[in-house]
Amino acid sequence: MTKKSDRMAEAGSPLSKFGVLVAQLNSIVNSAPQQPPDPLLCFDLLSDLVSTIEDEPKASILQWQRKCEDALQSLILFGARRPVRRLASTTMVRIIEKGDTISIYSRASGFQGWLSDTRKVDPLSYIGKS
Image (cartoon, rainbow, N blue to C red; front, top):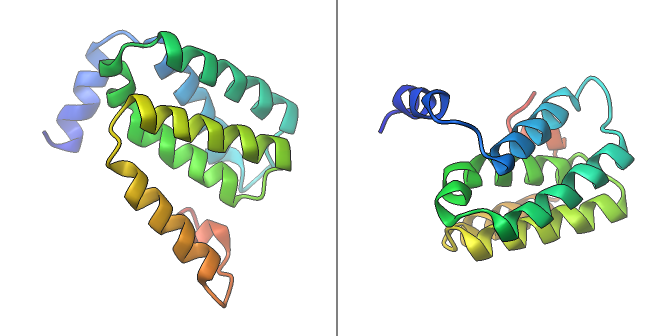
């Protein structure tokens, strides 16, 4: 499917609770370059996300997995506080565990590449937001 048909399919299907939480997380991450994310808001949202993953069907997880992983990775790279980073990491593990497990290789490689970069590139340029 193309990206356009993916968006049309998402627009035609009702949002699950998981999809709504992922959309909220994306909104927070997209506004992070202008305003740092509120740690309490992020913590509450991530807590809801973790508890929702357990009840969500695998099909719904698969539909939103990529967007959620991208937002979680961005949140971690923006330099969120330790409790938020830890909960974001836990959330990513649970999503990969219940969804498509192959994405763990690309996520680990991405983090490893950013951590080993001797120039410590700006996180915004690394995740493609600058």
